Image (cartoon, rainbow, N blue to C red; front, top):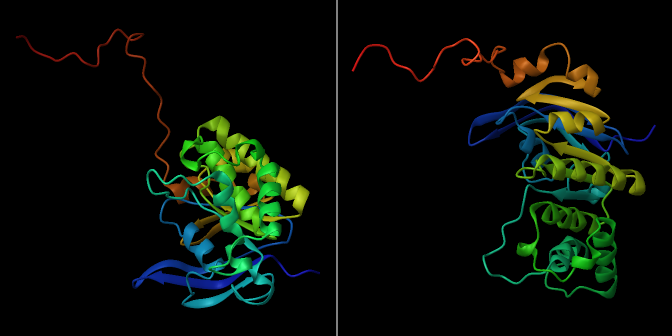
Length: 261
């Protein structure tokens, strides 16, 4: 049996002395799509930062393809953030953003090679933006910018793609297109996907498994298993069911005040 693409075993982590994760354990098999869900502050981004080697656990074991992050075969990792911040007015093209994905492979200070540029063109083509390669990144729509960021990650030729709330700020149609695209890329490239997200309905349709996180793992399994049984309501602290009252139908005016003037 192959080693999992992602393994967290008894992992705890802190920021400035404040606990962010406590005894977290889950794994993602190679070639699968797993979604990390949970309320704000649940530790989703911390999990991704651990896998990228940007944060060290205070306890437990973190492995990527059987190795600690940033060692051995663990370097086949691509990352798609919510967005990138480009200084206002900087005329950087979409293809230049994508070429940044080759920086680690070619080393700092070295110019892109012909191979780098070929990979950048192929990656843009795979996300459907080959015709916008020379367009200034800031002039693209939000959905197009996210596709450029996917292309940048693909340009590094990863086996694992980590995504941190990548559809924040996109409308519902753009979110649906985003997940359809990454699922197609997953199958075409044999990628493993781990996505931290609040898009519960959409990932429920696409993900193979869901990990419900609230500093520790509250539930994990198939979308149907995790989204049933009231565990989402407990983790997200949903309010009690509210029924809207039609004041017009009941002959009342909610803006009216009692008394005379």
